Amino acid sequence: MADNRDELLAYVATQYYLHDKSQQDIADQLDISRSNISRMLKEARERGIVEIVIRHPLQRVVGLEQQLIELFGLQEAGVVLSDPADPKRTLGRAAELAARILEQRLEDGQILGISWGTAVHATANAFAPRRHYDVEVVQLMGGVGPTEPMIDGPALAQRFAQRLSHRYRYLHAPLVVDTPEVAQALLAQRNNAETLEVARRAQIALVGIGALDPAVSSLLRAGYLSRAEFDAIRERGVVGDVCARHFDVYGQPIVPELDRRIISISWEDLTAIPTVIGVACGEPKAFAILGALRSGLLDVLVTDSLTAESLLRLATTG
Image 1 (cartoon, rainbow, N blue to C red):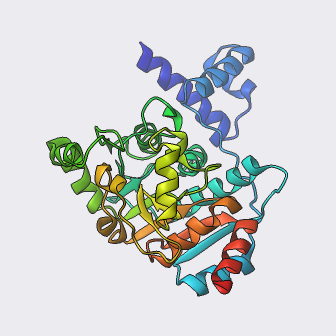
Image 2: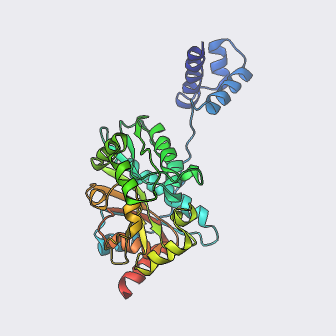
């Protein structure tokens, strides 16, 4: 019975949204009232049978994009105009652009790896492909747990998969464990080993860029780092991380004791993925983004204009 109802709702929505029939025309065809059609269209939206996507025009700063491509040898750069008064709006613009760039690069049969964090979460919210791609989604790093479930890897993998093929793989482990021995045991566990093997075969990865700035550090906010551990890593020259793999401002990997307790794709396997799309906004992340760019890890960068300007200044002054 529910299937019949769904078919009816889908039919009404198709006539209205795709065939430009009026509500009265559809009501006459089905011999029901126009108000009934109106209620059915509302029900179709509420139940997810109809999704309405509004694609806002994005103000891209082409000059900065070209400078980033030339300086860092990127495949592509996306720079949206910053809104200094509204950082959330700026991130939303960047996320929408990242979602569009991601869709342009998707093909049936691919594997898409994702990390976690605020920027990846915003991109997941903005991701509304025009069709369902036969793409498997795989989690690249362990979970953050109950502290911030909305930006966690499992939730984000599921969200992307819902808009693609509905196929996804989890890492059944936290991001950071107590000892290197526990990490090795979890990495060897069959489900996790199989998930990371799939991750190694990914053609595309969508990643956030973590910064060693207390105002924006996801690892610190999630409680995976104490403030003492955070300061100790920063003293070693770490400026940022991708998938919890740390590096300095020159893009050189640094392996503090923490890295040996991480459940995540390795640095070497991450760099081997053909297209890695990094999304990060905000001037506090400038050093971290610069390190990620210098490492050669990123193939595509999506950011905002103020951050891009800071990156270019840092890159040319030291």
